[in-house]
Length: 247
Image (cartoon, rainbow, N blue to C red; front, side, top):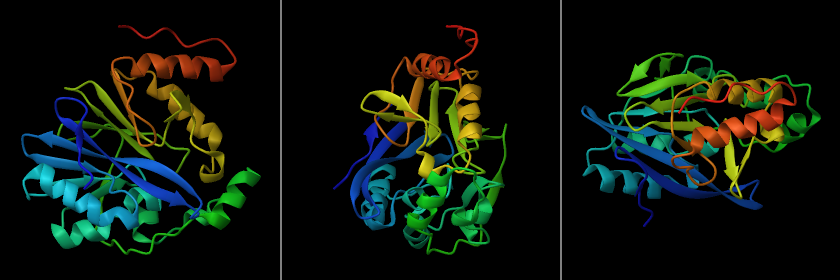
């Protein structure tokens, strides 16, 4: 059975596997955040691992389940376990106000207009979300939910969201940036309708105060996460570098 692994004092990580277009196996992380008022689950993983995810959440929470599920975005490999969570505990589900329509099914990622041919090709391969989640709460930039500060990081999707746990100095950044082969990468172009806005979101993230960078794809970067992100943003800027972050 897959188990959550402790990352910081209050954050645990569950790694799940999925196959992109049934060809390439890729790992995706789900996060469980412990708070005074219960547990927050961030994302729910792919649909085929929903049973493993629910079992791992039950084990980690002593059967209580999450008090709320927060979503970084609505791609199927991040929301595939929502139906299973509803059956197990029916927790409230929340996503950015601009992302919610893609989760409830009133909008479709494949119909997002993009000037990048790679995204047009990717949209042909993109798996739709077959689950219907009608009751979803909206979150916005600047809100704090059970100790997690909400950051709007658009580009990869319109309402892509990250979360900063202030006490643990950790940034759960979703797909805003990935750690592949111990190197930071922007989200893949064929799943990102607006790479320019996604790049700007990475720059904006360097302005936040955190130590640990916790991406959905790739291992956590502990202690030097913000510094890694700053160095990556400086290389991508190809212009005057942003100011060096304060310790």
